[in-house]
Image (cartoon, rainbow, N blue to C red; front, side, top):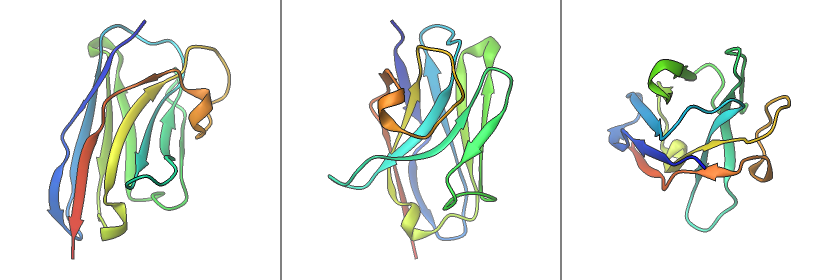
Length: 122
């Protein structure tokens, strides 16, 4: 059992930056990730990080977003730079409960936060 809670969302103009944070109730051993969802559309993977610090990113955010973690604080981060209106979405953090290479696929993640809204205006 692990509880996740996102924070740091808000409204920003295109080209701006935001840093999202996800606090976990306890340490997590395996992959952790950020997903985003627009309305009732499919939730899509944004970035993931493994226990060794290895990362993967969706092509749409590569070069603009950076995922990181502070293991001592059980916290996950997503630094978002050069934000675009199409980045507007509800952002969720997630954690896996089994070992394996990280993937950006919803069924692989067992624990989810409630989400934090990011709105980018032009």
